[in-house]
Image (tube, rainbow, N blue to C red; front, side, top):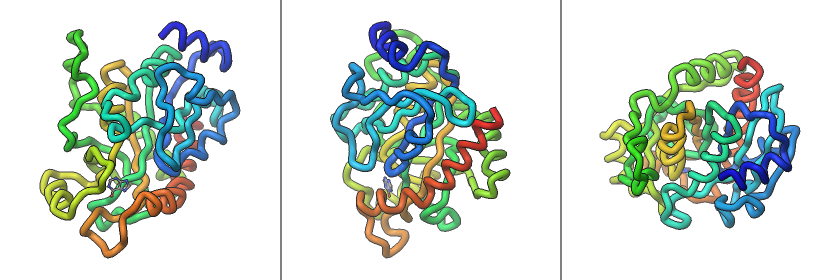
Length: 263
Ligand code: HPA
């Protein structure tokens, strides 16, 4: 870690970062809004290399709305290499850079007709439908992470206030982590509905667990790109996700900018 930290601080400066942002599918352009230094993941030992199309594999450290942030333009998903802890080095770096909080974003399918494609959803909580955990194999007692308030109530209140000020609807709901990379079946979506899921996606939950393990406060926002399988006649595909993500991305950017200005 100290080598990675020195490398990053040599390029981006040693001033402490306040907040980390992980950008989901189709949301990578927000990284370009940051006034700062972009470091390709390929230069960062332990960071994901290939990644998924629609993501921007750079770490950008700098100023966004007067706040020093570290923006992770891409994530490694569990389905890429079977590693639920793939984002651990990135989150450990974020902590070492001085951050106190993480905002994760993702593209997701909605199970709620009142949260249609193009809208945002703030995660009130999550369901780990995959049964996987990024802390399996961790030896210290710190692995027994309490998850009661994993989605930080104060951060969520600030995000809701920012959304309200921007006139953007930001309903809260429960996100369900499905391993992917295949999409869900209609029966799986019905099961997730019965379990209490409001949205479904292939990321974020391992990062929330890792961030809580590292003592970072966390909040996460989904941009809804489609109704979940079986809930509409629309065809679900990764192309469709990438095409629809920009609809929510513009709203997300306004909410995040306002949230940062109010920090
Ligand atoms: N399911 C899983 N992941 C997703 C979806 C979905 O319907 N939409 C965008 N990411």
